[in-house]
Structure formats: structure tokens, C-alpha cells
Image 1 (cartoon, rainbow, N blue to C red):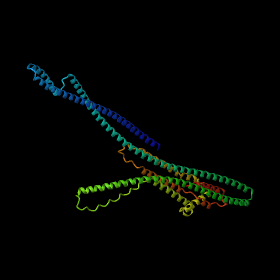
Image 2 (image 1 turned 30 degrees about the vertical axis):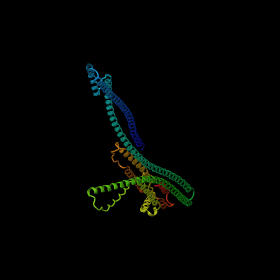
Image 3 (image 1 turned 90 degrees about the horizontal axis):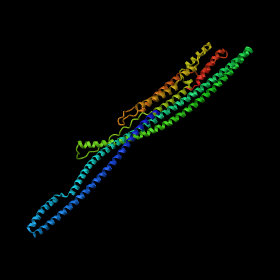
Image 4 (image 1 turned 45 degrees about the vertical axis):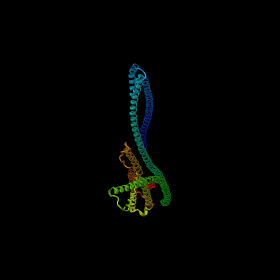
Length: 520
């Protein structure tokens, strides 16, 4: 989980860094474009001001030219009046001068100033105007280029924003998935701890039973030595009476100790059941919280689906009306409105891993209660009771003949690898789920993502496998045949039997006790 979380964080960081760099570049481009646009606007304003100045200058020059023309005309009229009083010679001289003067008004009428200074100024102004017009064209071209760049940067920025929203949605979904995986792993760890505690309890009980059996063997050896000493010192009749009395006392003490031991085992089993119930209660509380969260999510999805269905109904009705209007012209009398469409079907119940977990826990409870009832009422409801009696009879006959029997604890210890296999299977299944999630991974393109397999179905499969493995382990443990203590009580030897038979029988009873003390 940590590796997946680190990989997801590294991908998200890289994408966020790229987004940050693109934002910086967009900001820089906008700043450059704004500065260039400000400069262009300033230059355009300057050009407009210079053009206005030139216009005012031209208008003032035209006004002066018109004034001068009027003055010249008035002077000509006055001169003509005075020429009538002068002689012919004077008029001829004046006419020569008038020709030169006539050229000037023609030039003035044409609008061209004959002075060199005015022509130089006009040429300079024309050059400036051409330069300004060229600059204006260049500035307009730059403005268009900057506008195009601005549009491109805006489009890129919108793209990056869309990618950011998609990335945020993906990160949110991945966080949700990680939260669910963490909860499932927490449940698996809780179960593993519970199994470990049960194993510790079983080991403690086994060690106590072995100690008890060792003490019983030591006491038995002591009693044998004492009985041999008494037999050697006392007469046979008295020795027999004493042996009978000792046997009676020993049987009484053995029965009392067995009863005490059974009571202790029952108390320990009740403690184990109470602790398991507490753990199951905590697990059920957590599962109810998860179910409430999922219920809220499904309610939100249901409301969204209802709103979408209403919108679709409205659009369908509008389209139907438009089709009717296009296909059929409006009749004279409108008919009744069409009936509303049927309501959309409810969303199908999705597969939920938590429901499967609850069913597994309930089945565990049922199996444990059934096993306890079978152990309590084994004397009434066991179908293979006769087979056990036959097995006990055969064992007693072999003991009488002197055949040494094997220890039962070895077989029971070999036939009980259930909880370890269950925990190993649970860990392997969780690792398989994580590997599948790693292989699938988040897609590179946000727009075109292939439909990945849903994690809920994989969880359900894993939980079903685990349940089957636990059932198989329980069946193996239940199938192992274990002898009951009351049956061994019925087959105790008589006081007249050999000491060797008593030793073998006591050894078998101790081994059976140690096996029965281990909780299934």
C-alpha cells in the first residue's frame, strides 16, 4: 500500500509541476502581451497626435494662402483703376510685370507654394508621414500576431485547467480506493491477531495439560513403589485389602481432578467465546460505518440519476412534439395530450464486498455454535457411537495383550494446520489484489481510459476463496477422531489386573486428556 501511495504521489507531483510551469509561462506571455499592447497603443496615440498636428498646420497654411489670394485680387483691382489714369508706356512696363504676377496667382490657385522653405517643410512632412504609416502597418501586424498568441495561450490554459480537473478527480478516486484497501487490510490484521491469540491460548493449555500428565505419572510411579514395599512387608490378604483401598482412593481422586479440570476447560472456553464476541462486535460496528458511507454515496448517485432521467424525459417529450409538428400539420381541433412515459427502472444493486464479509462472519458464528452443540450433546446425537465403542474395546484388548500404542497428540497436531493456512491464504489474496491494482494503474490519457476491472468483484472473489479454505480446514479438524473421557471411564480395568495394563491405560488417558483440552 505504501509503494502504491508513493507512486501515485510521485505521478501527481510531476503532473502538478508541469501545470505550475505552464501557468508560469502563461502568466509571462500575458505580461509580455500586455506590455507590447500598451506600447502599441502609445505609439498609435503618438501617430494620431502627429497627424492631428499636421492637419491643423495644413488648415492654417490653406487659410493663409486664401487670405493672400484675396489680398492679391484686391490689389489687382486697385492697380487697374490706377492704370486707367496712367500713359501707354507705363502700362506696357506694368504689363510685363503683371505677366510675372499672373504666374504667381496661377501657382497659388494650383495650391503649390513657390517658396523653397515651404517645399522643404512639405517634403519632410511627407517623409515623416510615410515612415509613420509604415510603422503603423508594422504595429498592426504585431498586434494581430500578439492577439493570435494570446488566443493560443488562452486555449492552452483552458486545456491545462481541464487536465487539472481530470487529475483532481483521479486523485480523489485513488484516495477513496486507498481508504477502502486500508480498511480491508485492517480487518485482515484484526483477524490475524485474533488467530494468533487463539494459538497462544492453545499452546498454554497444551503445556498445562502436559504438566498435569507428568505429575500424574510421577504420582503413579510413587504409588507403585509404595504398593511393592507394602506387598513385600505385609501378608497377601492385607496387601490386597490395602491395594483395593488405595485403588478406591486413587479412583476417587482421579474423578475429582477430572471434574475440576473439565470445569477449568469450560471456563476458559467461555472466556475465549466472550473475547471473540467482543471482536466480532467491533468488526460489525466498523462494517456498519462503512455501509452507511456507501449508502450515502448510492443515495447521491440515485438522486443524480433521477434528475438526469427527468431531464431526458423532458427532452424526449419536446422532441416528440417537434416530430409531430413536422410530420403532421396542426389539425383544427387538438387531441388529448399523450400519456407520460413510464418511470425509469431502479438501479440494480451493485456487488458489495462488505455484505460478503458480513455473511462470512455470520456463517462463522453458525459453525462455532453448531460445533459447540455437537460437543455438548455428543452422547445423544452422534451417529458413529458404536464405532467409538468398538475402537475402545479393541484398544483395551491390545493393552491387555501388551501391545504399545502410539501417542494421539502427534496425529491431532498434524491434522490441525487450519488457522495458519487461513491466515496465509488471506495474506496471499490481499497481495494478489494489490498486484492487480498495480498492473492496471491510472491511464496516461484522461480522455481515453480503458475500462479497468472493478476492485469490488476482486474482493468478493478473494473473500469467497478464503471462506472455502476456512470451511475445508474446519471439516479436516472435525473429521479427526478424538476419544471422549466418559467412554474411557467405562472401560477402566478391575483391581485384579496387572500393573503393566494399568500403566498403559493411564498413559492413554493422559494423552487423550491433553488432546481434548485443545479447543477446536
